Amino acid sequence: MNSYFSKFNKFPNNKLIRDMRSYAEKEKVPIIQDEGLTFLLFLIKTKKVRNILEIGTAIGYSAINMAMQSLDINIDTIERNEEMYNQAIRNIKKAKMTERINVHFKDALEVDINEFNRKYDLIFIDAAKAQYIKFFTLYEPLLSDDGVIFTDNLLFHGLVNNSERIESKNLRNLVTKIENYNEWLANNEKYDTSFFSIGDGIAVSVKKNG
Image (cartoon, rainbow, N blue to C red):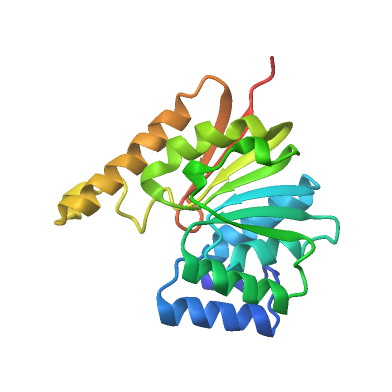
């Protein structure tokens, strides 16, 4: 984030949040960048989001930040990595948000979406990058009519659209899949999607009228 603007943006910064950021940095756990988080929380506040579905919990950093925006916010979040799941559970307990943040220990591609008995104002996709199209397709039926699908990491550390810099074949394949997702989103006839060079690259998708 631009160092000048960063001092003006306000988002949760209590001891738990600081500890989680330090843990993520030390253990190389990918969490949403400050600039992306600022944009996400702004969206939650302006759209008065109340029900959120998050694909990819990690240590619970973004879920806790989102839940802090209002006592009326309830979150379902899905995580398949047991170590991350357990860490998220501990952090959510420390935040005293166990009644508002429900962590599902599952592979997000193996979930029966009928288990979720509500529509969501916001679906936040931030899990395995190679599966973004599958995540979007599987979970978009759970989006409310005026809801938003928010996707993070679409520039992937500046490697998207810069494949000539990538020596690793596996990494190049991953970046190609992210590029394919961006193209797929841009051409999806059911949604209007706006792309932002914020944080690590963000897309905001809303259903088209009619």
